[in-house]
Image 1: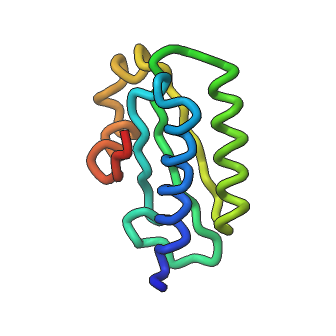
Image 2 (image 1 turned 135 degrees about the horizontal axis):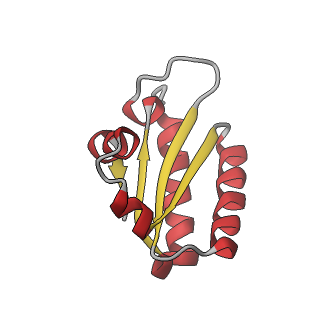
Image 3 (image 1 turned 90 degrees about the vertical axis):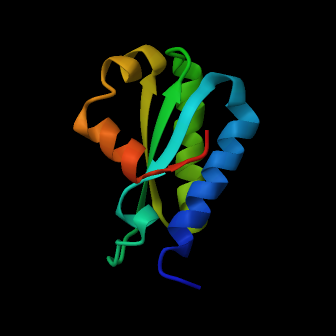
Length: 109
């Protein structure tokens, strides 16, 4: 098993479960960061997820935050969820944070 396996497994598990529960609400789901690239050599592994929802839906966002916490606990990693409604994502596509996720990340949706 490679060092990045828990992070990759957690990203895969989160993406699969999030899509199963809320596929119609998700425009983009991108895992990114050092752990996904395999650069994370620390004791604690973090998986960052950029999640773009079609609309600002607080209930869906809360459910996905709980899912991220559950998946993180199951895989022994921290899943950091960054949620944006589609209109804010489109307004900020040139922001360095968004660009990093798009360029370095693994897209699931």
